Length: 378
Image 1 (cartoon, rainbow, N blue to C red):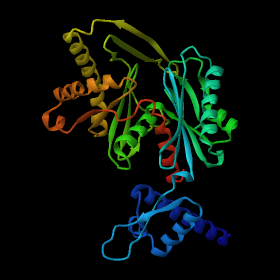
Image 2 (image 1 turned 90 degrees about the vertical axis):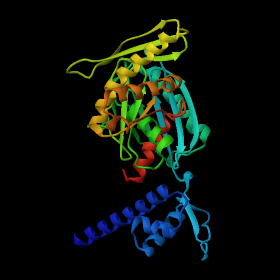
Image 3 (image 1 turned 180 degrees about the horizontal axis):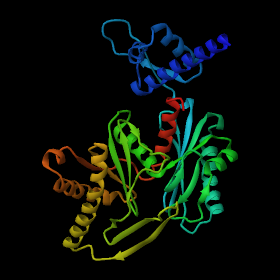
Image 4 (image 1 turned 135 degrees about the vertical axis):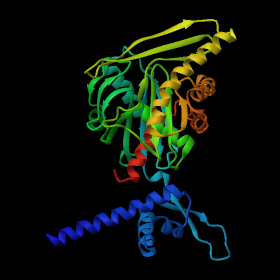
C-alpha cells in the first residue's frame, strides 16, 4: 500500500512540474531554460528533464537564440501552438460563431451561421453540427489533438452538468444537455459557459494578454451583462450565471435606428424571455436627440455599473457588444455619468473604453478558456 502511495505521489509531482513549466513557457513566451528555472523555482536538473520530455512530445520547440550578454548564447524555447487545439462556439440572438484555435490561441479556422428565436432545437443542432463539421474538415485537425469544445450560451445554464436551463431569445432550448449531445457526436469533451464570460475571456486575450489585470467587460445589447475579471481570472458565480446586471438599455445600431430591449426573470423559476425588441425609426440628424439618447443610455448604464465597481473594487470598464460603433459613442458618456455620481478621488481612478474584440471573434474567448483549463490541469 505504501509503495503504491509513493508511486502516486511521484506521478503527481512529475505532472505538477510538467504543467508548471508549460505554464511558465506560456507566460514568458519565447524564453530560456534559465528563465524558466527562475520563474518556477524548480531545480535545474528537473527543468532540463521536463523540457527534454516536452520537446520529445513536440509540445515545445526551439525558436532561436537569446541576445548576447557577453557569454554563450542560450536557446530560446516556446510553446508549440500546433501541439493541441480547441474550439469555441459563441451564440447570441442571431449568430452562431465557431473558431478553431491552436494552443497559443491563434485562430486557425473560423465559420459562422445564423440562428433565430423561432428556430426549434433540431434546427439549431443541425446548424451547429454543420459549422463544427466545416471547422474540423477544413482545418485538417484530427480530433485527438483537440482538447475540448467550449459552448457560450446567453441565458441560464448549469455549468456543472453542461445543461442549458433556459436560452434567452429561444424558448425551445430548455433543459438541453448540450455538452452531452456534442460529446457523444464528436467524441470530444465539451464544456458550457455563459456567453458573457466567453466575451470576458476574448477581451482579456485582446486587451490584457497574459497579465493579471482586473476589468469589467460589459455587453451592451438587448441585455446588459458584465463579466468580471479579477486579477486575471473570470468570475463565474456559483454555477456560471453571474453577469446579468439589468436588461434595459438603449443602443444606437446605426444613424437612424434605436433599439430598446428588456429582460425579465420570472421569480422562483429559471424561465427567461425577451419581452420585446422593437425598432423605432427616429430622426437622428437632430443633434439634441442623439445627445439626449446617449445621455439617457449612459446614465442608466452608469448606475448599474457602479454597483459592480463598488462590489468588486475594479475600475477598468470595457464596453462591448454587437454594436461596436455605439460603444465607441457611448464610452465617454458613461465615463462622464460615472464621474458625476462619484467623489473625484474615486471617479478619477475609473477608465471606460470600447472593446478591442473584433466582431465575430467572441468565440476565441471559448478557446482561451479551454487553454486556461489545460494549463491549470483541469
